Amino acid sequence: MGEDTEVVIWWGASVEYGSALARSVRKGWISRSTERVAQQVMGELQASAYEVQPTDEVRTRAIRLLNLHPLRAADAFQLSTGLIWCGERTISAGFVCLDSRFREAADREGFNVLPFLLES
Image (cartoon, rainbow, N blue to C red; front, side, top):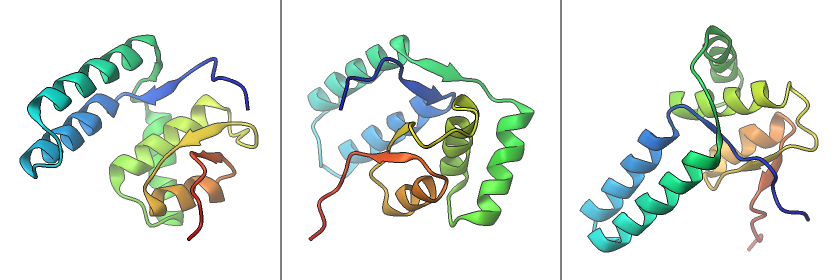
C-alpha cells in the first residue's frame, strides 16, 4: 500500500483530538508531557492537511447519515466530510478510524477503512 498523498480532516478535528487528549490526561492514561507532544504532532498534521469547512452540504449529508447509521453527531460530520471530499467515490478512499461503530458505518458507505484490525 502506498503512502497517502493527501490527508483530509473535518473542521472540528482539532476539538475532537483536543478533547480526547484532555480526557486521557484527566484519567491518567497519558502524562502532560505526552499530551504536549501529541498536540504538536496533531498541529503539524492539521497544518499540512486539507480541512473541509462546515457547509450546508456537510450538514445535510450528516443528518442523512444519522438516519442510516448509529453514529454520534461528530462522527456523522466526519463521515459526511469524507463523502464530500471523495465525491461519494469511496471504493479507493482510505478512512482512518478506530471506533467500531464508526468503522462499520464508514465500511457500509464503501470506504477502505484503516487501519486494518486483526480479528481475535
